Image (cartoon, rainbow, N blue to C red):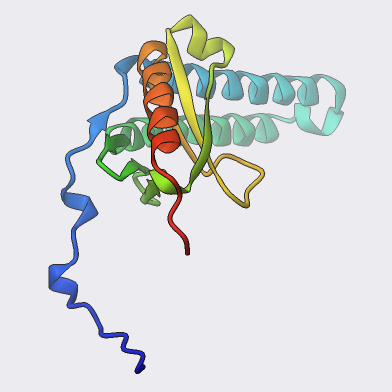
Length: 176
């Protein structure tokens, strides 16, 4: 028996970029903004503590530079949140789930259902306050989630989890 491994023409490959994606919930943008605001407030408190307790930092130049850097970082964080939020989305297909994220560094993940071991739904305090959740999908050989889809309503995340769990229970994993 001869082994053949013929190349597949790239023109005939399916384009994952062409798959229409479901956008994340608009409330998720608010959660991202609040998380960023919390980080920026913590950084501001650290800067104030440095100004109070370390005499070198009380100089006007040090205060001005610190304030300028803080404003630049805050503006960059909020800008990146806005730009990356609109690129995030997910799609459920017959055999897999797709999640796309990122604006500057773009990432598209595809996770086949026959590789998923289990799934969980996670809700942090801010997510709970806005009725949101994160769907986490785990595949074999990894201690961490292989795919996280944040910004789903709690109902959507739970129903997707149940649907995926039913799907993976009905379909035996293919041999490699």
